[in-house]
Amino acid sequence: MEITYADVSWLARGWELGDIWCLTFVRDLDEAEALRRLGAAEESIRPVTYRELTDEGLFPHTALAGRLEGWVVLIERNGSEATKPEAVRALSAGTELVSVMRHDYATDLFVYAIDGDRLTSFDPRKPAWRYGSDPDCVLDAMQEVGVHPTYLPGDPVTREADISAEAPTMNEALMLAARLTGVVLSKKVLNGSLMGGVIGSQADAPLEDGQLATTSLPTADLFAAIRQDGP
Image 1: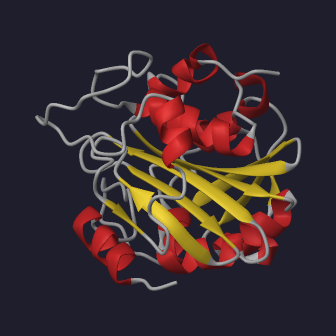
Image 2: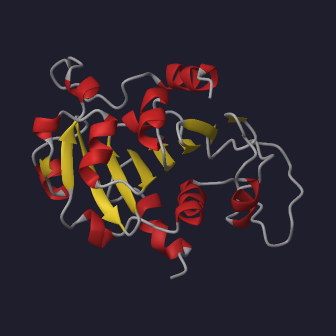
Image 3: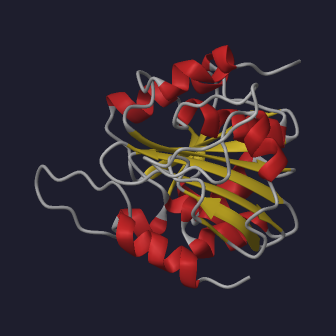
């Protein structure tokens, strides 16, 4: 089945997952193993629906995992544990990982890794600034979905006729993930049967009354860690 922009636009609008979220696709793992690799305590892994996650205020401490054909998708609302360098290494060990993080108040992030090696990562809105052991490894897929690899905000870019001249958005980032994995998170999967697990580093972080944690690292520190993290 061909995946189109209509299949990802409901996620890009932010009406379901909100304005801060992270979707991480990992090949050939089951839901429980993906949660363990993310750092979920074994005793906390249990069936949890997305509605329970939101109605009971379980996020950002609880990550969800759902099955997508040969992949598992990890769903973090108001969290981004899966984009941390140590999580990328653990989740992609012996397999393949694609992660898309949306943060409307800081920086978005796209990560592609294989067997513990972060090949490329970048802010989808600034795709010219890429980091990793092989930052150009997904150039063809980027251009196919409308993300020009030399684009920076405010810079004029000469593009082929079939490439959008607009600045890349979350639509393109989600389409790039779909192009690399062949799967997409649907409303049916999001609202269906999922597994959940409490992520240790999030659960252990103290919160003041009324404070909602979004990431374990400030965005600037997260990008510094990504740049310094070797293969």
